[in-house]
Length: 100
Image (cartoon, rainbow, N blue to C red; front, side, top):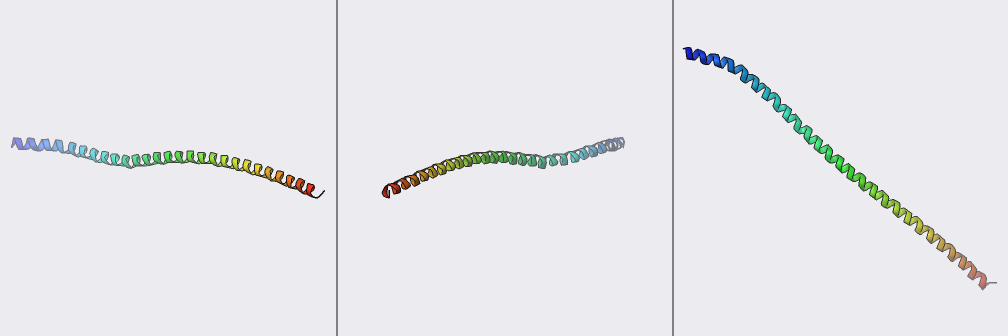
């Protein structure tokens, strides 16, 4: 009987400790699970920020290209207008020589 009482006494001492340990493990598990969505959200955010930065660079590059094309277009338009003015002047001179 003494061994039976000793076993019961040990169980009475060990069971509360086991319950506390199990409770702490249960509390730690949700905390670990909570970090997974946060880590995934952080990774998603960083990926989005990287994509936004790349898109921003692309927009700047495209804006530079548009500016260059507009500048070239303006220069071409001005050159064409100048050529049209010269042609008009030469036509006036030719008409003046034909009918003095």
